[in-house]
Image 1 (cartoon, rainbow, N blue to C red):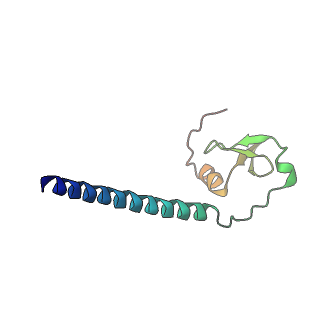
Image 2 (image 1 turned 60 degrees about the vertical axis):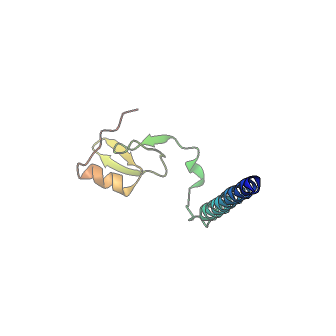
Image 3 (image 1 turned 180 degrees about the horizontal axis):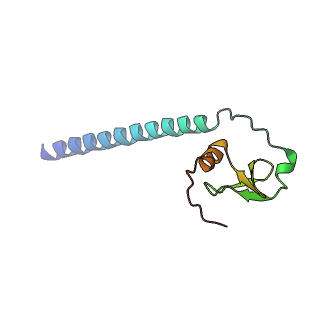
Amino acid sequence: MGSRMTFIARMLKYLFWFLAVSWTVAILRKVVAKMASGAAGPQPYVDVPNNAVGQKLVRDPVCGMHVAEGLALPLKQGSETLHFCSAECRDKYLNGERKLSASA
């Protein structure tokens, strides 16, 4: 009788772990599929000029990001022209909210 109970206990233990692993794999597959479908969704259209690829890179003085000169937002200050990656960085610069980005 004892060996029969041991066998049944082992079978139940096996069944429990089999179901636990199966459900975990099924949940992970759904999560990965949802993440993949979200990343493969329609991307917004960005109009990049053909000559932007061959242009030199300029550095945003606020965040330090490098941008193609044709895509950057220029700001003339005296004899110097500064280039910004976005209107937000330009506005921060004009309002004096500058981060001290490392100079390149």
